[in-house]
Picture 1 (cartoon, rainbow, N blue to C red):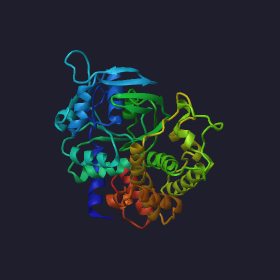
Picture 2: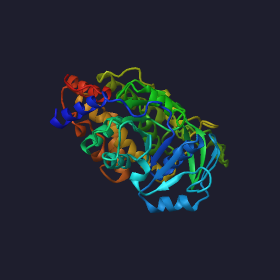
Picture 3: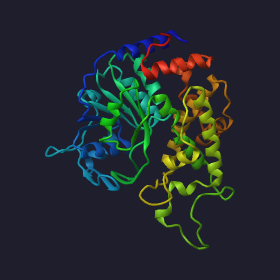
Picture 4: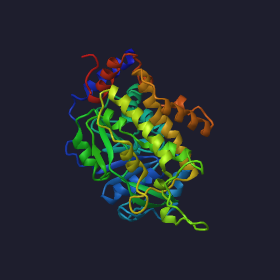
Amino acid sequence: MSSGFDEFTEAVAQSTTKKPVIESKVFSRVAILGGGADAKLIAALCLSEGADTKLFSAYGEELAALRSSSGITLRGAGPIGTYHVDRDDGSSIQTTAELDGAVADAEVIFLTGPVHKQRTYSMVLADHLSDGQVLVIAPGRSLGALETAWLLRIGGCTADVTIVEAQGLPFWYNEAGSVLTLTSAAPMAAATLPSGRSETLNALKKYLPNLVVFDSVLASGFSDGSALVEVPTLMMGGPALHGGAIPIPMGGKLLEENQTFASLIGSSQKTIIAKLTDERHKVAKAFGVRHLPSASEMISTYGGSLRGDHSRPIPSQKMSKSLLRCGVIGSLVPLQSAGQIANLKVPVTSAIITLASSILGADVSAAGRRLEAIGIDSGDIDTARRAMDAIATGEKYGR
C-alpha cells in the first residue's frame, strides 16, 4: 500500500474529528458546476425550492445560451415552469464563469456532467473548499466518492467536507435547448463519505427527493446498475435480437409516447444484464457488500417503465455515446478493477468494455476509474477491504 494512501486515510480520519460548520442541515445556498442538461435540471429544482442558486461553467457558449434564453423551462413532471436566469428583479439562477464566486459561500456544491469533468472539478476545487461544505456527485456511478476524496486530497484539500455519491437525479428528461420535458425517475441510492452523515442526505432530499440512504459509499457504489442496463441496451439492437418494444402491425408506426428506453430492452438484453449483475454481486460480496438489487430491479431503476410518467426517453446518438463512455470509465472498469484485486474473473463485464471501446474508437478503459489509481493496489483482498473501509468510514487505515 502506498505511503500516499496512508497519508490520505489519516487525513480522512482527522477530518471526522472536526465539528462541521453547517449544523442546521437546512441548505439554502447551492452552486452547480457545469452547464449541461443535468446542471440545468438541478439549478431549476433548487431555485424551485427557494435556494440561492449559482451555476458555474467554464464554457462561454453554455453561459451565453442560458443568458440569451428566457430561462430554464421544465415541462411534464416535477415543478413545471420557467426559471429565470440572471434577473435583477426577483429570484433567478445566477450564472458565472468565476469558480471562486460560485463556491465561496455555497453550502452545497453539485458536480455534474461526464466523469472526466467531475474529475476536473474535484482537482480544481481542492484549494477552494472550506469546512462544512457538501459536494454532491450526481451521478456518482461506481466508487465515485472514493475517487473524488483521493483527488481532493492530492490536490491539497484539508477542509472537512462531506462527499455525497448519488446514483441519479429525480427525473429523466428530453432536452430541447433550455426546455426540459421531465418524467419521474426511480428512487436512487446515495451515501456520504465519511459515512454516518445521513442528516446531510435527509437535508438534500429537499432538492433530490428520490434519494435512498445507504450505509456507505461502498454499498451505494456497488449498487450502481447504470452501465449494466445502459451499455448493453444501447449497443445491442437489430433484428437478430429480441427488443422489448410493443409489436407493430405491418405498415404501422410506433407512437411517440411508446418510444422509450424500456422498449429497447428485450430478452437478449436482459440476458446480458443478468450476467453483468451476477458478476457485480460476486465482486461486491468479496468486499463485504451484500443484498444488492437484482437484475430485474436494476432494469426497473435505470430502464424506466415501458410507457407513462415513469418512462425514460431514448437518448440521442450524442448522449448515447456519452453514456457508453461514462459507463465504461465510471461503472464497468471499477468493477473489473475490484475483481482483479479479489482474484475474480468478470468475463462479460470485460467483453462489454472491449466492445464499447471499439464502438467509441478509443481504449476508453485506459481512463477508467481503477482502485490502484487511488492507492488501493494490494493483491490481498483483506488488505484492500480494510483500505476501502478506511476511506468510506473515515477511520485511519491500519489502526
